Image 1: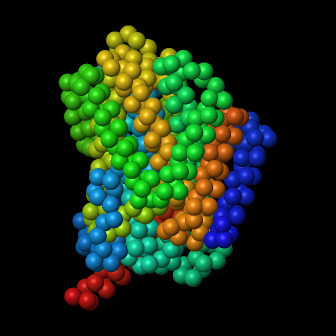
Image 2 (image 1 turned 90 degrees about the horizontal axis):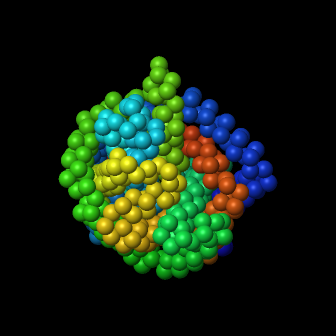
Length: 496
């Protein structure tokens, strides 16, 4: 505790105030945050589209530039983790729970409930549903995480700076980042992390509860979700105590093994040929239409614009709000890799795996829907289990899915406690266990309290609102990074 900084105390106080508002006046909290979110979507939708597209362009520029040869660390440093473990760790921290939670339900929604442009239930809607899902979870998201993580990793490991968002802005603002401006940036990052992860924990608890209810008739009630959060909290605190090289490393590898096993099973037991054919065509169409998708804002089509606000713009803001947490963790486990290797791994591997995941689970769910079984009648947290129930070995796959959500749940919370500990102890790469455990308990309490008042929607609104100011920080981080990379490249040229 003696290492806690004012960032810790300010952020903790803001979290308590926000949760207090949500508990005392949940309806007013949701209404106020919903109004602000609606305004941001309408006024800044174009801005979110532009910034995500530009970040992807910057990633490509850096990969092909001479900067790609620069190592994240000393020239003699080599990666701390194997490539498989590294990819598993960044993937688990990034969007593991989301893949399981939305793997079947999002493509199904785009097909049967609310397609982007096609008529519901048509073959065109089928193909469009997969393309749009790849887009929402694909290369743009990981390019954004990659750029923010690259900035953090470069300044941490190449320049020896503390592992803080604020230190990445020093090339632009110098020592002013040691004062109130730097504190403001770091507090914003901590705030977004706490609520982003708390929402994920809420979703995870709801899905585990939904799976147990669907399979075993367990009551789908608040107290069951509290038991789930309590058990998972105990497990991730044990993992956090054991450290990065043990707890998160082993859990991340377990996640990948379970995820690959579930994906292989759905490929074999689902409509295999249909999955492979549709994935081939829709992923190709996604790549082919990447530019037009990136800038599509539908200014003259009110219905399509409403869809974009509810899905694409929402997702872009949602992912930006997760950037401080995910990117800082990715940076922490990436020491020793070259910039080119880092960006290719961070951007391409999760994009391809995630697209294959949605292609397999989405195609299977939609194929079942077309056969006459209405999967849309189930709540989102049960859609996956309802899909499995129509396949051979459905019980086995459901049990694997519950285990997978649980391990993703633990690694997300574990990774977040590590990152929150870093951000609130002057960027220490080895934050104290006391700080990590305190943040871990705080995250779980926030999730539990907000579930009790039905406040997850308001929390989603809150972090999307927080994403807007952080997006400006991201722009500054990219400018500062290019400035620092240019200086570093010139220095390396002079040494030759």
